[in-house]
Length: 125
Length: 107
Image 1 (cartoon, each protein chain N blue to C red):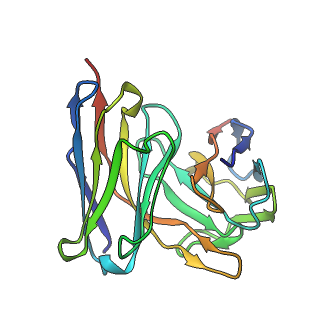
Image 2: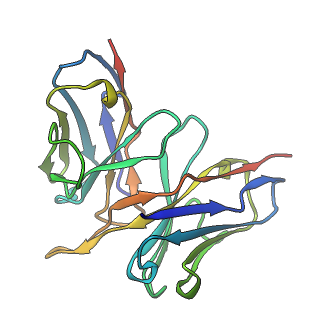
């Protein structure tokens, strides 16, 4: 059974840092790209970041670029999100998400087939 | 960035109704469109990928269509467990973007 378990969330003050972790099990972690997606309280879904299987390709949303770093450790079956200079608008439930995407004739189609339960990040003074 | 606009933002329907949700992209995205269902307090669930491919285990009453800029998610006969919020997502280019969601409520 595929499991994605996030941890590391909490209450921090604006400007502080936080490191989120995601422990993956039930599948060959190194064979899948991964993403972070967040959801502010009562709001919709917002994609945050993508990392390829080998970490060779990384993408970020404009809203977090320069403040957030995604990484992974395939030996530990783990995904990470280092979040710096946190703002109130970063307050959200952060989901670790498996990417089941594939290449077709036009490019790479990302799609998210498994989601963790999320870890809540609250940025407030 | 590609903007995704869903309509309606909410709808009320009865069990057994046929329900259609529309998603429009701000530019052509070919068939790079996915649909997710999120029930209250739960994690999003993939329903449809590549505009019309049904994810394994998803009931066949769910279907997706469209290409280019206009897409639809159809529930052929609404069931009690289908009351939820539905999101479209474009995967044509980064940043990947979601629609604002359509909440399907009980009439």
